[in-house]
Image (tube, rainbow over all chains, first blue to last red; front, side, top):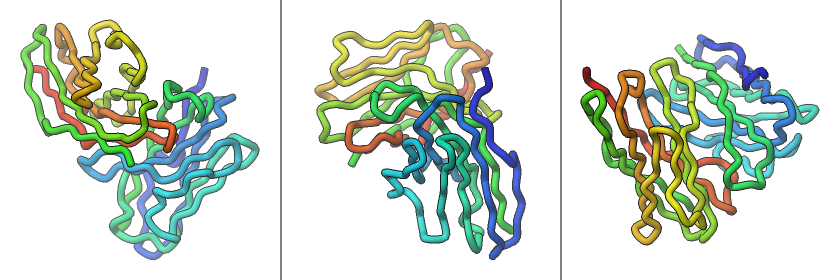
Length: 116
Length: 114
């Protein structure tokens, strides 16, 4: 079956522009997560969705970052007025449900964002 | 809050030898899960192994095993019979009932030498 997909795979933008990153989770996965990985670093949590609601937004670094999920499926991460420090790989993951501690999170290939 | 510490930025191992990648963690929640992921140069995150805090035995998955020492808050990954394809970044992560997302360590870059 299809895994988690993300688009675009690469995005180059100019400082100050808005960008939208898309995530298509595995069908039937109710939990969806966004992480950010800066060059040579570990993954940093941004936001998690259970269905269409976001019980945990604590990782969003500023109010320029927002995300939504519709129909319990596709999610869009939006970064407004991009800054150079936003340059990173943005990874999306999904799992069957957030409840089980052992629920494996399946990751997408990521979107590499470069802000010039 | 959870925390993961991986103190080895880089490790080298000879092909066919075993290697241990260190991971220590901190959480105040008695119920938690520990994960190891592999990230090759292609960038994908590949799940390797899981250990629950109440599991009585150390987890094993093929050539991967987890040396879980609860009292020391340690969850080291052991890779037996290393292969060239094992060269990658390895991340330890924790999840507890207070936060559903994973908290990752900074990773260890493993290089397997022929």
